[in-house]
Amino acid sequence: MENVEIQKSVCLVCSSEPLKDKGSRLLGVFFCRECNVFTTLENADPRAYQEGNYSHYKASFFEKCIIRLNNLNQIKIVRGLPITTWLDFGCGKGLFLKALDRHFGVVGWEADNARASSARKENPEVEVLDAILSSEHGNQIGNRRFDVISLMHVLEHLDDLSVVDNLAKHYLSKNGRFLIEVPNINSFQAGLAGNRWLHLDLPIHRTHWGMNGLDQFFLSLGFVRERQSTFSLTEGVFGMADTLFFHSAGQSIYSFLKGGLLNKTVALPVLVIAAFFEILTSLLGRGGVLRVVYRRNV
Image (cartoon, rainbow, N blue to C red; front, side):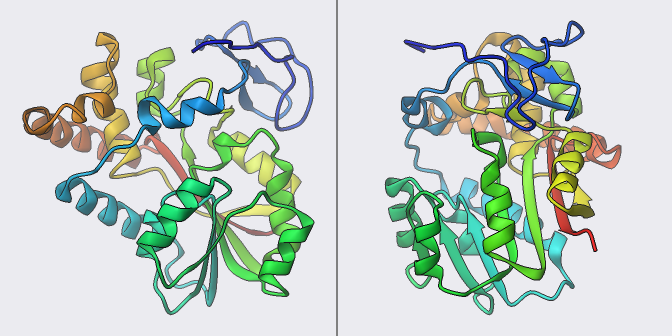
């Protein structure tokens, strides 16, 4: 990417300034020994959100079905918890919102206007906020508090992680939970692919999380882990497919699938094989994502 700048080596989680871990296998990031999280060194170019994996792409009916199944699997982790209201922060184009039970009081929040507009089209009956998190935004929500605040593949994009603390203090109910999903830097696929791992996604992903780092961060905010999973039908399986069949060739599975029907047909057995290995590694706790429910530490 053009005009890439290297930022000062300050941890985005705890603001410490450690040297890059000499034992790190990853270029372009450093490991903070204080909080067990990797931080990306390069500044992100906003244009990257319109390019590469983030470029406009019309998913096929089959792909939409897989996404839908994955969304239902994501929601399953909160089954049985007392939930009446739900805020999906960083709701993107609204696909996860679409899977949420409308018996909840569901609200979406997406700072990017174009994606917020797409979320409204997908969910015309759902309120979608579209501004940067600020004290003024409370006027749109009023005194409402939410039993669940979900950040699905949002945490890794944030330069300012105080956003999470603000959400906890101002928008989460007393007995509320966070539902977090991020790529798992300690997954089997990440270890095998190294710097070519699909979900490393430098420099767009600002931080890179393992379970220890995630637990430590939320504990600092007053939360403890309640439930967890590492299996994903989309990010997990696609990441595994990319690791096994594409990363060494310098091409991503996402760009390959944009090539048309023939490419999708060729990719089908690849995805079946990847799903098998992703299920296996998830059973060992080393699947491609971390999906975690955090509750207040009381």
